Length: 296
Image 1 (cartoon, rainbow, N blue to C red):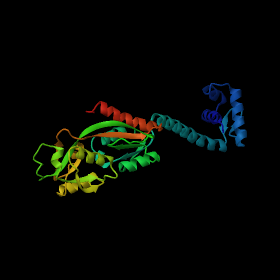
Image 2 (image 1 turned 30 degrees about the vertical axis):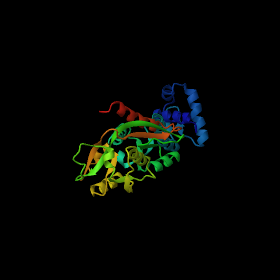
Image 3 (image 1 turned 180 degrees about the horizontal axis):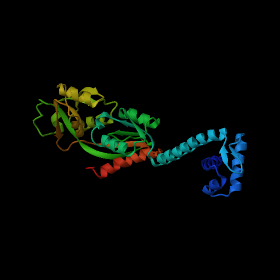
Image 4 (image 1 turned 45 degrees about the vertical axis):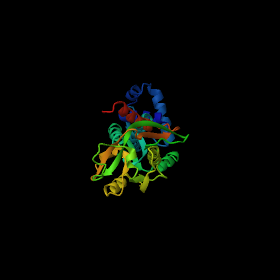
């Protein structure tokens, strides 16, 4: 059915007068009468009864009037959603992340994003970087966050923020009284590390120790930050973590700054090069704004 015919019908059903309806539609009365007859022929039933004194809806006309209102309301909704989707104000966003990022930039950006664009449904997926990258290439994720940029021609990364690496010690550790600890001072310690075969960040920290003059004794390898902190608190070893993870407030451990030269870490946002998603760009723009105005 031609929506123009439905529009003509709706106006006439509201006015019940061909002259007034034609005026509202900015057309003359004869063409309006022809269009209504065309609609009635298409539907196979009269929609109006016409006399010299009045125009009234038939039972079929009453039914169509009610349904036409729903059609136009849905059309307006469709147009509005389409425009919102085109601007990135409606849709979905699947985000991959590692648990250590749930302090600082990312949760703040999510709060701003939620406040500005409540019609976008976003979902967090807590995954290791290798799993994030695979899901991103398989289009199960739209955006990933981790601390080492990918080496993949299908993906692009942009650095968002950098921070220092801190050594995490049991509260009663011999080095806990210091304000700064040199990496080489950890040569005899047992390390609690993220899994070396799954985390490029862990491999980077391992190599940093080698460059400092020793091969670290990796006592246990874990996946989650909280597991690492719990093992350190129990006195089973020490760890190297981004300084921001100290905001988790894990009792029984202390964070100490590494003396220079010391490794650092950068947070990257990673996404597919061929992804045109407006929602993705809107979220990335929020993070870029936060970097430009860090005290936001």
